Length: 318
Image 1 (cartoon, rainbow, N blue to C red):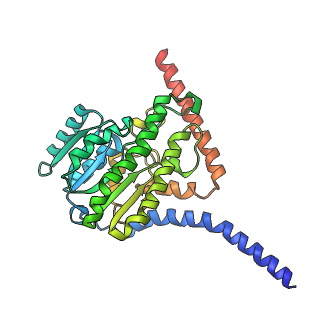
Image 2 (image 1 turned 90 degrees about the horizontal axis):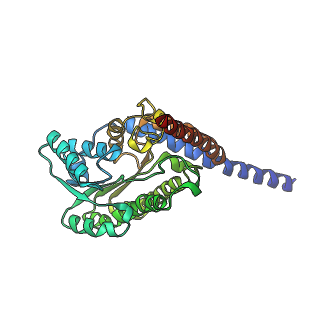
Image 3 (image 1 turned 180 degrees about the horizontal axis):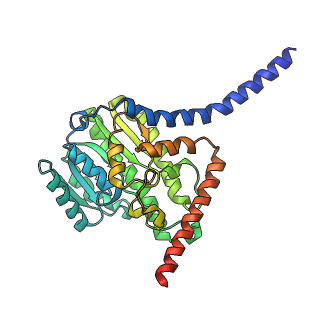
């Protein structure tokens, strides 16, 4: 009798253990949606974190839109991107809209790895950065099998998605720690939610960003720092230009300004978020199935997007 009770107890514990992970994932996804709704009061970013914000990859897409939102809230900006001409254009646009703020620009190519940081370190040494937005990212030109991806493209993805996020954080975090305040916003991707065939390396680098962010928060929360991890799903940006269906804004594929306006409102309220309420709903349902099903769905979706790319290419050649 005791053996039978023990057996059923073990079975019950195994079933409970098996259920804890998926239930926890889905519950966290629900909280990410609900917490910003119930805590809708706007945070004064300057007083909470400091007067200066650094945004990488800031001349297009989410990075540019996020920088514009920061400037609208009175933050001075350091814009870092590869092309000087586009940086100057973005700077002028932001200062026309918000003439009372300061904007500094730094031209740097993160695909070059360590060499990119020599100039950045020198330019930032006297600026008390309160918010760092690690937005710069690089993905495949279109969904590809690993053997099709050019070597320089793979090195670029690794150097930008992993290297830039890591080294920009290391460059600024000690100064934030000394001041006892600051925020680091690591913009990842919904591709991190499962291994993703046909975007294999890109998704793996974004899983790194998630792991990096969670561990960093454990290290530095006690020093008063905010480490936020954002996982947007599809946003209508040039990064997704390989498929026309992702170049049409909709409820679930917002444009960059819509995404950034929603995302910045979550800073200081939730540590992990999609950044956009409709993406939060998608995330909630995405996390219900086990990983192997999510991976299969992701592979099928990327195959459709790959077909879109070749169809667009063929149509252009006709």
